Length: 121
Image (cartoon, rainbow, N blue to C red; front, top):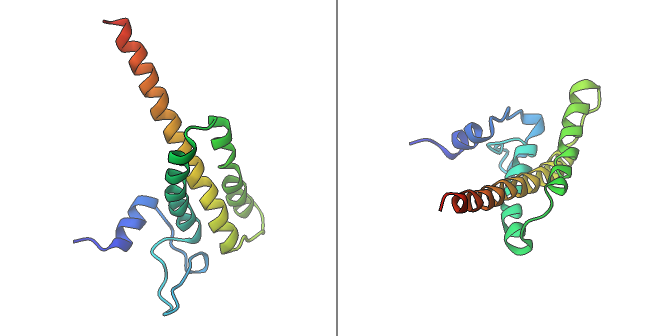
């Protein structure tokens, strides 16, 4: 049987760098980094928000991804080093945005599927 840590690492393809991960009070490292932890939390929050609010414009969902992309690329291309709080926060925004994007895709597929079905009946 696989350990939950391995499952998280496979699902998120996470680097698990110790300096970019949270640690429990016992010193044990979380199974995924701070940004992936934020994305996972964002998925959960996004599902709740999508149920409560219903669909939003996909443009707004895409805007929620921008902070994560900027933070990641600025770190990659410069000497700037983000901190775990920023990684967690931008990850949460990205997770919520991803949920809304999937909701938009599902809604569009259903709408167009119903339209297509009507064309053949």
